[in-house]
Length: 248
Image (cartoon, rainbow, N blue to C red; front, side, top):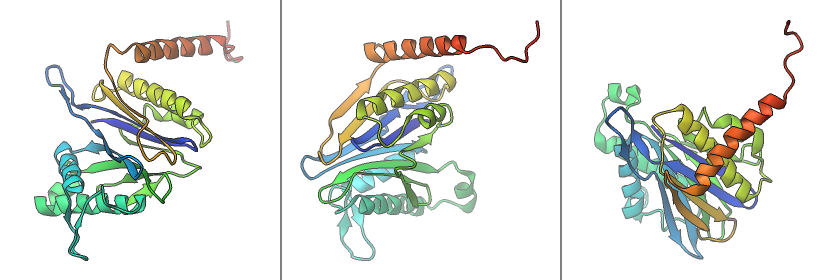
């Protein structure tokens, strides 16, 4: 499994993804799930995936190398789309094409074993900064001011932190910090999510990535963040009075 999150605020976009794909006593594999398509001054687009790794890698290859548009006959690539909406449509078509080429049976399709979900966020020159979640059927939803973050994979453990803290007015440094806390909470509760963690930030209208960084196990800031968050939680619950209905 995996956990990836995209946070869209007024200042810009934060995307975070783990790298673990298998977990077990003696079977742990690591693959990058957060990728960047960038032409500085023209576009900066983050692509994060969860689900079937083979399907996700095939989709990534198709949108990178290009594939034929059946309507226009032209080769479409994510580095040539005019808008972020067009980029989301392209990724949706690529997912459907991978499933078609794979010739999945109805039973295979319904099993969910070949499902994939994509987070696609960024900005193309002349358009606005946007964040989409693209489903295995190729359809998608978009982050809004009311719902400024989207998650894929093992999202339930990190969701409460974001629900309580993230708004569209959150500054990028705070959004990144909260995203890392959300990731740490997921790692602590689910063996299928793990380090290293990839981070991407894009400021609005910058049309380039500001931060592209990988957090490893020995990274000092992430270690300190984990310890500080655990201490803050312990202090918070100890400061709350006990329920008044307890009896001696």
